[in-house]
View 1 (cartoon, protein in one colour):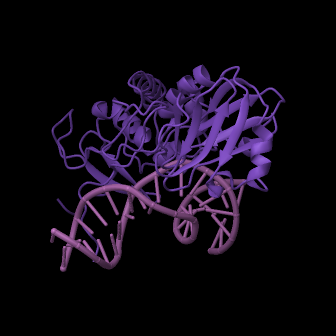
View 2 (cartoon, chains in turn purple, cyan, yellow):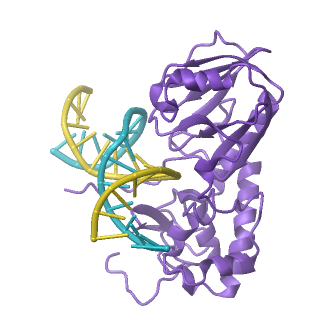
View 3 (cartoon, rainbow, N blue to C red):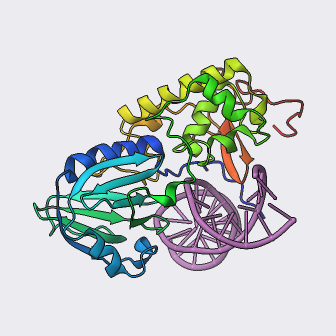
Length: 295
DNA sequence: ACGCCCGCCTGTAAGC
DNA sequence: TGCTTACAGGCGGGCG
């Protein structure tokens, strides 16, 4: 029997705003640092490397030039032209401690030590996250689309992207080959502001809705970054220092299933789109012909 | 070529 | 109260 859970959508995985918050702190901490020592205890976190030693050797003695971000990927530029790529996926965290003797959190898989002291730790219970060192052009990320924060899309850009796309709009927003950084939380939040249900075909978006999309996405990202990102009840996402993000309290639909819509009072509902749950307001985000059968 | 769906994992909480 | 089990999620790869 299928359990009727009312409280889904409570998982936080870092999306663009959360990764940007981490990037800023990470750059402040790592810039001009030279790694003296790297300890790998979780093999899965460095699974792309031939061996853990390969990963370690690529980092030891290297100095960090800058820390960039593309979508949900962190890109740490090294002085030899290589790039340390970090993806937190579902449950990964980067944590900084000035004290190397500080107790390790459970699921600490990689520890990176700058000459100047302190320690950067990669913590990841589900081990979906990973890190690897690659060449400057980062071929692994060549298939990814534009970053809508560092390279914002205008309404016309969105129109061009959505044209002739039969994909459901939510799936398209979350398709990292099209634009990077948008996951379940921020796609739901933006779709609510657009007044569009996530299962509508992307190609059906009108010009006015594209204008809202362009504006709402930047506004939501800006507010989320300023709030330190979204941390939900699982407290899965925290920043480099373990601090929680407060943007979840500003969510209008995500993780609010069963609660009244802030705009119209209708009950926030959920639907499955491409195997992912989506929260939406049945009134503010009207569907097409189909009538809802229950409730 | 493009859409869709599985597998990877494990903490959590529903359900007994 | 305690045990079992379904489930969420991003992404890569395989399938249709």
